[in-house]
Each structure stands twice: as structure tokens, then as C-alpha cells.
Length: 194
Image 1 (tube, one colour):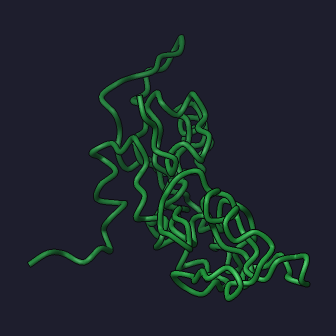
Image 2 (tube, helix red, strand yellow; image 1 turned 180 degrees about the vertical axis):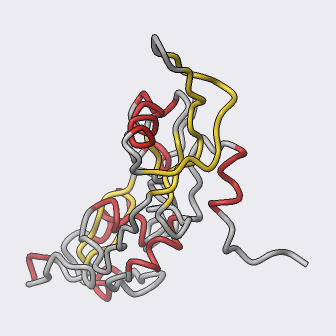
Image 3 (tube, rainbow, N blue to C red; image 1 turned 135 degrees about the vertical axis):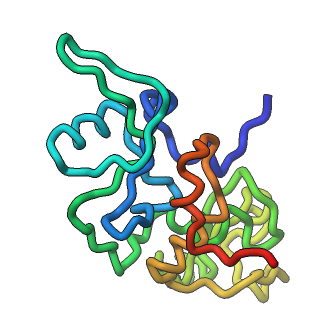
């Protein structure tokens, strides 16, 4: 059985496989696309009970307590708007997402590591502008040499992405589970085909 590196990169909570709820901001947009903002059904029910969210879609299944029967929420909207972060944290995950989970030298996906374009041994810093996703083969081939010395070139120059840019890149990688009740909320601002 083969697995997809992009979807396995984010470790999922086992509870999310059982009726997760898509979480939307107060403007009806997902808090994040990749990883997709979802809660376990238990968290969604609790948030609804505490009046922190509005339920806009439900599964056909119910949960029961001694005195209450509740339909499991499928899509919830936060009552209070959460302002999206403007600055993107420099993390391995965000770096791979910026580079669309592909080697910036050969374009292959999977078995990724990161490479300093200007090697640290030569004064290169660990920053958005100097680190790229690279497969192990290309990283080993380049070693501690410059691009010119190694005879390699980058597919695109590394730079710090904006938060909105990273969210848009994340939309290219849908998760394994997309319930039909989520579709209107995930792609509502996508361009329609003529």
C-alpha cells in the first residue's frame, strides 16, 4: 500500500476520522486549507453547546446523552472572527508547503529534506530566502557547494511567502476526507468553469 507524502505529513488525530467538523471563520472561510481546519465531532458539539459556534451543516448521525439527542455537526462557523496571521512562521512544514512538496532542483516529490542554497559552511543563513525543499538525492549531490560549483539550478528563487499565498498553495492539496457538505465552503471563491 502506498501513501501520499503530502497527506501523511500532517499527523491526524484519530478522532477526526470519525465524523470531523469543518471549522469556518466568522466570514465563512476555513481557518486554514492545509492542514484543513477540522475538529473532532466531540469538540464541535462542545463548542455548539457553549454557543461559540453556529452549526450550518450536520451529518445524518446522532449522539445521545441521558436527556439529549444531538445531530453531529459537519460544518461549524465561529461566532467571533479570528484574524488570520499575517506573518508566516518559518517551519519545515511551511517551507515544504511553499515549495509545493517538491524538490526545488529536480521537481520530484517525496523523501524531502531541506537544503541551504548558500551552504552554512560558507556563511549561508537559515532563512526563507536561503532554504529550499530538496530530495535526498539532490541534497547529497549539491553538498556544501554553491549552485554554480554543483552545476545545479533552482526551479524558482526562494523567498518568504505571504500568509494568503501560503493558504492558496494549501488549497491545492485536499485532505483524504472531504464530506459533501463541506464543498460549498471550501471552494466558494474558486473561479467557475464556463
